[in-house]
Length: 450
Image 1 (cartoon, rainbow, N blue to C red):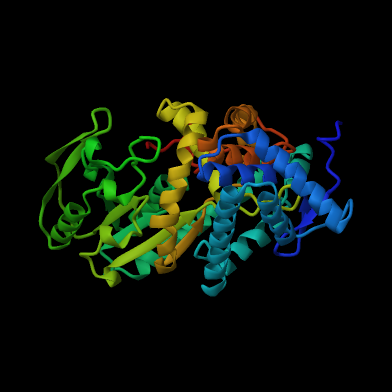
Image 2: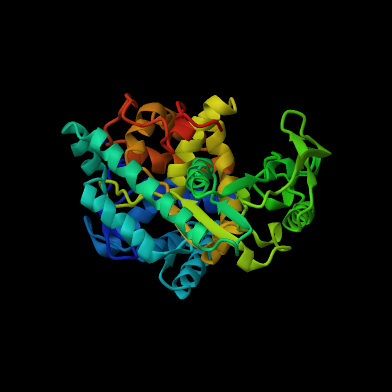
């Protein structure tokens, strides 16, 4: 190991008091992102500055010290200014301030994470601990002991029971509710959850009739674009929200409607195509990424809506004690599904994910506190499957995007997922996963039609 590669600091203290592995690359990437915000494009300079930050930390706190995140950020600011990078320093300080404000806002909201009640997350963590799958090493032990099929059965039952309980709550509110909204971020498993909830309602003599929100997209040329010039399907403003409201009000008034038809190949829609009417035992179903977005259903009184939210609330920790990001779980699902369903290469999905996540933060998460029921769709047994099918793409992504100032989001996500999967035992044989599993929505082999 060369002198430039040697890291005299081994551990750092996070804001919650946990000690985790120190990674100089995280400092370099943070500096590079700040530089990119003021048109900087030199990754090598960012890495040299990260080494100087490290030297300053060692000089201040001593070799093999354990500085806090705040200590490191203070030294980054000082180093950038001392080394003549005032514009980058200002961008870094601005980003740091924004993150601090966001943390303060989350703390003021109470015991929530991404607006999901903390008790729900705690229950998930307890379940994982009880099953021995709350860490990467724990999952590895289950695989080594031949207990992977048992983990699959337990996780599938937990999920099925949660969906059934949600359907029971819907039934308890009939006839008051007229619309069921099943919402969640990309690749959370909305479609399978909708199918399973529908089965439960059908057994009770009720039925969900879906209104296909995708048909309400405006023509592609009217969609907003992101900073790379790509059309953005992820924003609710790409949908004809007023027409959706008009049709919902008509359906609930006992009228027939004709919904549009949107052709994803041509990017065009045709009006008045699919006729739709509600029978006496039918409830309107909205299965949509933006189902919680109030403007989509503002014409319907709140008491007539039942809102179910689904998210991958996984509570699996890396060897460093860091919890897997929920969005990273969903990213991996979508990378697999896009490759066989939409003919997109996994790295295309990775680079697209920045505005998927941005839209979630803007148009989904702020409205979660209005939901009636939350379902956890995370399956700890899916991670070894993801390792087998996806891991090879992440080193390539890290190499490709590491020096690209416009693709730092993709680089950071790729590195984070790589670090999560690196020590996980891969599982190639997916035969223990039943054909009714939510995971089949993404890896294929489902008995359901999507």
